Length: 315
Length: 261
Image (cartoon, rainbow over all chains, first blue to last red; front, side):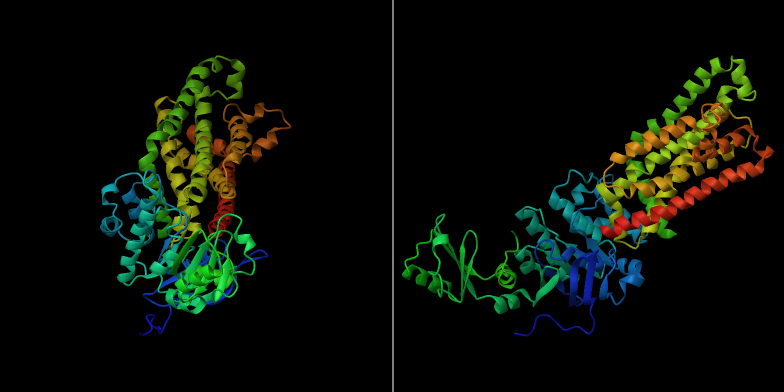
């Protein structure tokens, strides 16, 4: 199979030794990455890994402390407003104007980019349709559900037809149904060729949306690749999860060794990393282990993260 | 310049949605105040010989009205430079949303101040019409009292906006009104000439930006400004200097907040 990610001649974003410091605290520590046109690129990591700081530097709202950053071929230090005119930003927290209606929020945002009123109106109607909010066009923002507000925020970020869409934790705090609806919208954008850069601490989100991602931990990038690539590189094909009755897991010292390629003990369960999960289950039973529940599943980015950092993504 | 106009446009759009709630406080309240004090209380003041002497032969309404005009724009400016700024930076974060677009922090500051100036001009115009209707105007120059009152308000709006951008909760706004706006309102020559204050305190009144605004506005409404144009220019210069210093400070504090996120 050919490499699904084309190697571009130029990058929409290019970072070399990119660093962000707040006083003596280093939020982003000399990271390197490139984002190609049309690509969906993700930053996966737990809260506090430096994802938002990185996104704010790319969005030209937070100055670079050190290193090189080029966004759309320009330097944010010199060309902030010009770069910002060509990107769309979906911030982690909603920044919608609750004094205006749904449609007015889109229209005024288009005006910030210097679009004519007529053009703002035309695009607003199109985007309301895309965000499935046409029926709420003249309603106030406040009574909208969390998922609707996020969709409105995404629609708003698209009003200037950006070359690059930045999404910081786009589905955090949403219920599963709202998340799937949002993913569907983002997937459509991706198919249209919009370059997406997103941060997430949900591995399923990263797997769904990202062609390529970097795993961040403690201000640094610890791995880079496509989701499949990372799983192949850092995990086994399958994982067997064993849950024992309360108190039993602590008494298993030594009995788990050699059951699989790698064994991880989490507070609530044991993970056996082996290409053949069923074989690992059989081996455990042979040793007389009696887990309460057994689950054999495919490896995920969660396992990659655990392997790379020794910690779970969501703690 | 054009980005500043976008910020003004947002504020106007918000105002269209919310103006009903503010009609009473911004237009009716000051007018009621003027009528109660100027016409109601004024009738008694005008019967007093000592008051007539202190006011230089003016009716109390004539003395009070231009001062109250400047004091009213000060109060409105202080309000507009506190809660809406906190709304944009902390509550709704609409200024952060703007900052993600080509709009710069300086445009956000200036756009808000331009909007405040428009609001103050509306309030001052209504107030001035009432003054004329009740015979409180002695000179056609009173038309110029409107921009004078707007400048007075702006000299408060910019530094207060700068302060508001440093706050994450509105708790200290009460202190601004209680220890700043209210004493200035009462002791800047609005209700009585500052020559009636104890001699030791009088120089303090000169430090009050409102006193400069009241003097300017009164000179225009009564047509006495021509007698001492240098003095009038000093008032304008003081108010302009405070306004510009406030803009420079607000540019820094607003940008710092936007960059911090």
